[in-house]
Image: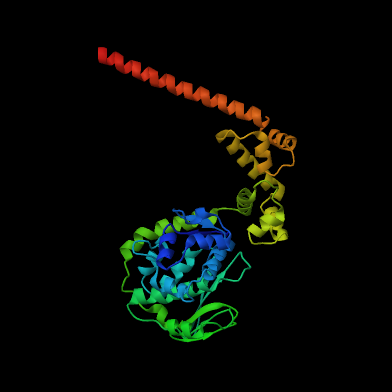
Length: 359
């Protein structure tokens, strides 16, 4: 299944800074946590990803920012493996196929290439979110395809036309960048070009490198396709929004960008229910907090969205057979026993070493 997750690369903060974007202001406008741009790759939902780009637009970014990012690509040494594989493909058509195939490893975007006679159409559609796709995201994706052709073949690439779902805006700028007519209010965002260009050989073709890279990419795709299930996604969403209140199915469905009825149907098909997912999330979080913190049980009950401590205690007993305090005490006792055993083994080793030294 397709994941409702989009990766934010570790270099995003510094890269956007070179474009004059204040990421702190962006996250404030998007109402998202600051950790997103604090180093390391992070994953966000499609809805959060769109909110980031909408906030970038609101923060005063130039209208051609998406085009610039798509045309320039990532900083040197920061290409993702799928882009590297695409750039070292045999021709333009193979490169597009690789990007389309591996794109779903990092985001729920559907790239569809269709040919009819002398014309090819590459459409890009986002799934799992009903929000309007930010213009910067669409511009960047289409500009990336144009840039991929130029980098691979060493030649410029001018489409027959660009079709956009948005209302007419910045037409002269877009026409100048793409070098073709731009049509608005269309059913899909797509790039229309001559189909013969799909066979254009890439000067950057490197079959030896591809032989090394593709198996690992295939493995990653297989692992990605194998997980997570809708039950996993629901449990993850519950954990994200469970902060002192009982997450309703409507709130979780909104987090996953589907309706409550659709979410219930997916869970039913997976052989589970929303209540079971809620119990699993609460069980996991409760166990982690009881084992790794000194937080009182009533505070944990509050964070998990229980109305009272007794309700939490009864639920926890149903999950593990003990009350929260009994379970914590047993874990603490076991940990002390394990620590004592380690200490005795260390002391025994030291004594043995000293004996050997005396001999």
